[in-house]
Image 1 (cartoon, one colour):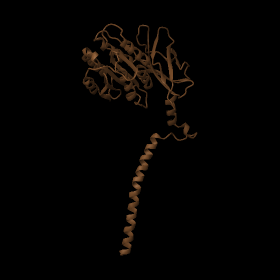
Image 2 (cartoon, helix red, strand yellow; image 1 turned 45 degrees about the vertical axis):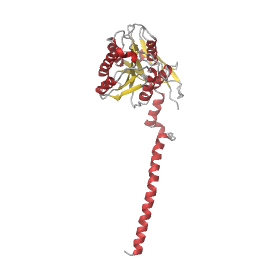
Image 3 (cartoon, helix red, strand yellow; image 1 turned 30 degrees about the vertical axis):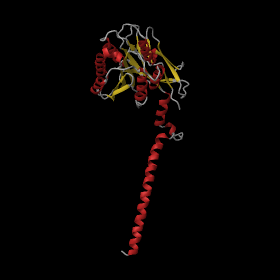
Image 4 (spheres, helix red, strand yellow; image 1 turned 180 degrees about the vertical axis):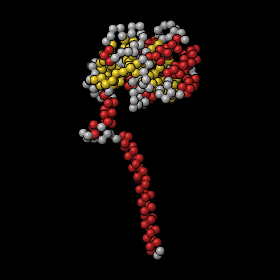
Length: 333
């Protein structure tokens, strides 16, 4: 090879290397930007043909289809499990739905549950018993590979010794890690659990979302109000059950707070007067979770305007009572 040809070859190789070196970071940055753009950019315009695709129909369905879990009881408070769609009247925002998409008994939906335990100083004398009753409840309620739960203990602040899992041993260990003492920030615990665990808990299939609170209902430390806690639970579509730890035998202010929170979300509050009755309360919640109906419907005159829309479900048969959440917040677009 002559010197001139060698020089030309080396020059060409060096120029190529420089082009690659200068271009690679730019390509990498372009790819990163494109990846970010996919997340934050608005949806592209849709042709008439695209509007018939299954993906778009699924997105549309999520916007204007409402799913409501509810229970029906007789005049003695016992669950009635053999009713049909014809036995109920439904109003959404004070109007009958445009159409009923589905109605069925729902005992096999996956359960996503949060157990919120008051660890403030006021529950010290009952704390060990409450822990044992909560663990027994988890052992009976959580099905491996199907359901999942998390544990939160709250006093002045909330602590989460165990995140979502279907492992009952880990959940039990999480309950045992809780230490009692301090003030009570009940509303904060509800608000954060609903926002951080359930509002972000997006699923491609329907699930039952529930919170079980074990507390005396006395809040003296929260930054959020009771109304804000209830609103966040409604936005996250969480049913709240509450077990009062007040054993005075009287209906105190905290008991009324627990009842209001449970009622607003379609749940129920329990007031055991003896420690052993806490176990019975957990058993009643477990039974209720296996006795629900679910109705899916399209509301009439629906707008994605972000406002609260009321839900009213009533039984057409005499002496039947229905319990469901009071409403929901429409998505905002």
